[in-house]
Length: 83
Image (cartoon, rainbow, N blue to C red; front, side):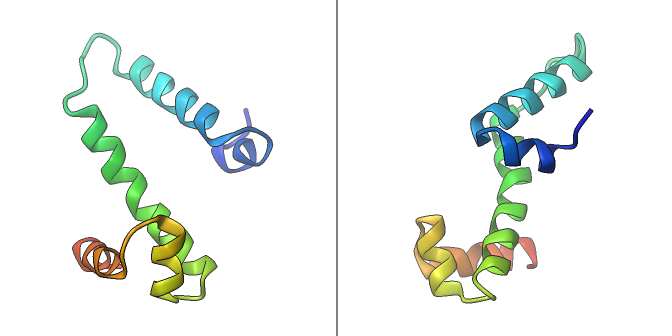
């Protein structure tokens, strides 16, 4: 079974997310997850910000533009997550 990184290169992001969420729900079985949306957003935001910052060589203005947020918001998230 290919990992998500190699899978992402050949499929669109929504398909990768859909499969990952479906697998997560299957793994949970009969135990309903609490606050699934919040959990996913929190877990995805950190690697998203890290990857975009790496892509921009640490340039926060460019990263913020790519992420569609203000530089101030990006700086707050960097502090929040200790990046």
